[in-house]
Image (tube, rainbow, N blue to C red; front, side, top):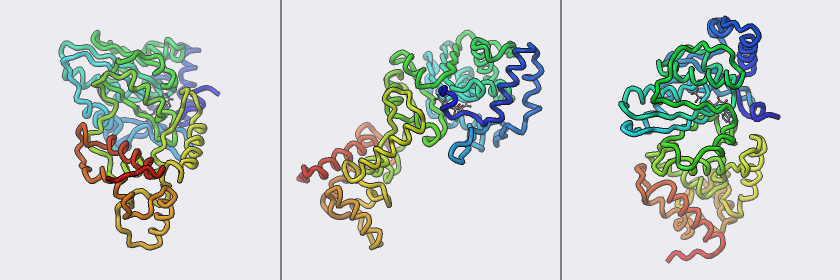
Amino acid sequence: MSYEDNARIINDDIFDLVNSCFELEKSTRNNEGRVNFFDTYKNYFVLTDDGSYSINSKEINHKIETLHTSTGAISESFEKFIKPMKFNYEEDIAILDICAGLGYNSSAAIEDFMKNSSKSNLTIDMVEISPATLACGLLVPSPIKAHDITKKAIEEELIKQDYATLSLETCEIPENIDINVYIEDARQTVQKLKDNTYDAIFLDPFSQNMAPELFSLEFFKEFRRVIKDDGIVAMLDTALPKNDEIRIALSDVGIPFRDPNLNNSSDYILDKRTEERHNARHTTKISSAVKTPIFLACEMDDEKLKRRVERNLAKMNIPSTTSDEAFYIVECENSYSKKQDEKNNSRNRILDMEKKLKKVKSGNYDNT
Ligand SMILES: C[S@@+](CC[C@H](N)C(=O)[O-])C[C@H]1O[C@@H](n2cnc3c(N)ncnc32)[C@H](O)[C@@H]1O
């Protein structure tokens, strides 16, 4: 099974129509199919609130996700990926756009760059597994001017790969903008990229249940390698909610997806994590059932719930929700604040709680 069959791609019907359109273009060398595609098949596209178009994903486990939020596909790109980056346009910028889809995130980056930079250069490496999805990017009306530049780069690559035939995009890519389009599984691409290269990585996959392979520990380790020391993957300038920190640190919810050779199928990755979570429960992690860890250091009124919570805690050598051990494990949460700084942040608190749970479980805990 190819990567594309295996990964989560767009709705089968539109996928077939787009493929046929470009096959016809190849056999007839006629541009009509492409030029008329959007008007003919408009119903297959999803109009979002800001006037830009999205498409649906394939149905997986009775779930369909649109590629973008219904409140506005192109607005989402600016809000989620461009604004938080606070790029310094005095200097050259390199962006890795993973899950490039219709090319909206790259286009938003180009638009912002062209508005704000004078002498610097922009490099964008776009990665998308599905040629048909990139081709959809050529078929939708451009939501912003810069999308025409992205379309040109996508078209060039689709022609190189013998998917598209005709060069219909007339926009010139400015000299100070360099766009590379990789049409393959992002896990393959990242392994080919050089260390210490990117100022920003946009990661825009479907949800974890649909694409767990793009959330694995090993995939994120590759990000660490290819991003510059002061680069940004996603800005987390506020702390995680307190209860999320506690559950990630102490319960099996915090077990990551694993994909050691960056080539396992989504189903395998999901199954393996379920197995690992099951094995960790009551041995290295508190059970996530009834959100047990969030009751540490709390008085509980609900007697029935308390019995269930304390049964789970006892298996990890924590006698009750208000025992010394309970307070010891979550004591770093006393300094919780939404604002993150170098010392006081979600990451440090999670690591601290994990370490303390280990000590309590092994009987090595000393709260003096
Ligand atoms: C939420 S959409 C991204 C939307 C996109 N950023 C845009 O501007 O239109 C997720 C995309 O991830 C792609 N995808 C899924 N698995 C992938 C993989 N392993 N590598 C690269 N792309 C993948 C899908 O084909 C889909 O286009």
